[in-house]
Length: 194
Image (cartoon, rainbow, N blue to C red; front, side, top):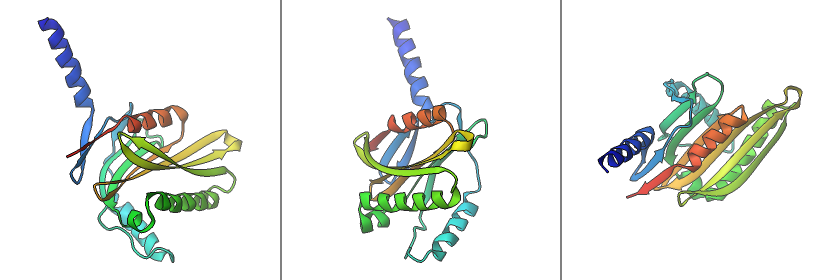
């Protein structure tokens, strides 16, 4: 019996140590990174500054968030362009347009950008509503298929309103196995509301 309890405790501790908890105000998000993904230490300040400058130039964007909190950025160990980025910020866009309305704005922007950036690819963007651990997400999925290379690149934006914040998970993948592993990790994640 002691041996069984020891093995059970050992298995439980291994399971719990592989998962990490991230705070979104008072809500905890429990997430286990997909296999072969590692934390990426990068200079986010430069990317944020470039994004802010772009938004300032856009005619139809009146304001933008300056309180973005990057919770996590993962990339594949092999340095392929397979990335997971997680952040939250104020929920003003969701308040102004509703979650579904905001997701549709993101969908239209992604399709416009994909058609501009990849004119030779077959680009499609869809929006679907899913539930992850009782939290409603709108998932905006961009697929760009490059016929000449028989290559599919995807960008998935998981968007939810959690504790009065816009919570976003962005998944960029260039192969099916990594895409499935990333999506499984996200769908298996948990939210603890205090």
